[in-house]
Amino acid sequence: MHATQHNKPSATRAQTPVTVSLQHPAHTAQTDVTPHVRHRPSRTWLGLCMVGLVAFGSVVSFLPRPTPAFAPSRVQPQQMLINGAAQAGGNLLAAGELGHLFVSQDAGRQWNEAAVSPQRGSTLTQVFFANRALGLAVGHDNWILRSEDAGQSWKEANFDSEAGSALMSVWGNTAGPFFAVGSFGGFLESTDLGKTWQKRDTGLGDRHLYGVAGAGPRQMMLVGEGGLVARSTDEGQSWTRLEDFYNGSLFGLIALSSDNWLVYGMRGKVFRSQDFGQSWQPVNSGTQLALYGGTLTHDGRVVLVGEGGVVTVSADGGETFTLLHDGGGASLSSVAETADGQLMLTGQQGIALEKQPMTIEKPSTTPSNH
Image (cartoon, rainbow, N blue to C red; front, side, top):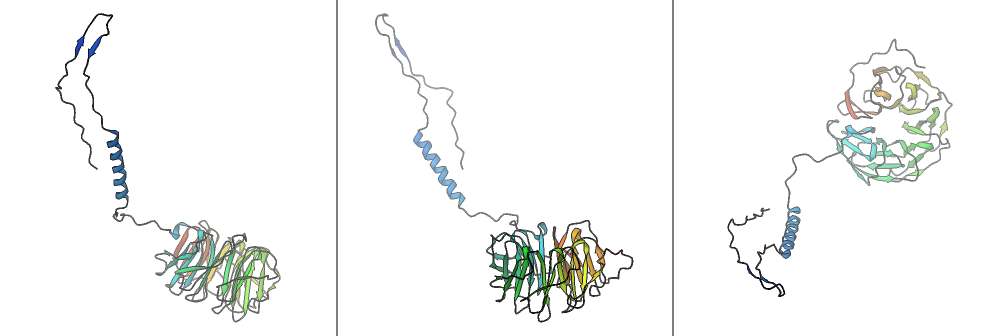
């Protein structure tokens, strides 16, 4: 825009003579005066200038602009709560608050946000893959998402904003059926590989259900609030509650085989069964902090994580555990193994990667917490 240059008035200006004629006071005094007139810009010209400026600004606003020097903002999984973790072939998946799902194709070094349609913004609690491509994610408002491309994109399969409940765990065989469990005894089943879901009554009451898993052709088990443990021998069609052996909540379970199971929960409690839940034996986990998540690695190690960042590992099928990290940090909610053998830990501070110890010694002097 060009600046307007105002010319200063000249130092010498021609003066117009003034003639005054004085008469008798009874007569009207007549004065012939030719005053100096200061010329001002016309209001019309001012209006035209304003219109021109507005038009010029409008044109400039639509001109192409250079790419900014800084990268566009993006959501970072390390800066939010991540609740669930899973491996899908060579991909790693992480599910967290506000409906965010992240996928990594390089063993967790870089993360990209997966496409979610529609994005409800409800917190996701767990992600599970039945095979290398087919995955399910569950969360609040009975939200269920489904992926067929190893977690790159997700489509909604179920949502109920009026339910006022959350789904906490999901599991199923490659050929189905799939099951999702959650708060207030919530239990949903899908018989079409997760595309549609129906509510089911398990007959177990309204206690919160925190974990579900299966092993073998038909054996399944679930755990929940107040020491609830139930099993099914007909692929989840009917459930039998087992006799109580612990009065605290159990947050997860791992099927080592059709007969060998581990359950874990509050106060670091871990119990082991070798007869599909007929009997349970307490196991010293090495901690009294709550255990929220666990996984079974490709070489048979059991890794449990939980409150305060605790990590405890068993190399003998859950008979003994070695404490790797005690409390004092941010809590961990889940753990998964990466393609290169690392542990992917998720929780209050997002995602962290940690190399697995090469050897694990059996604890000898750790005091029992049972």
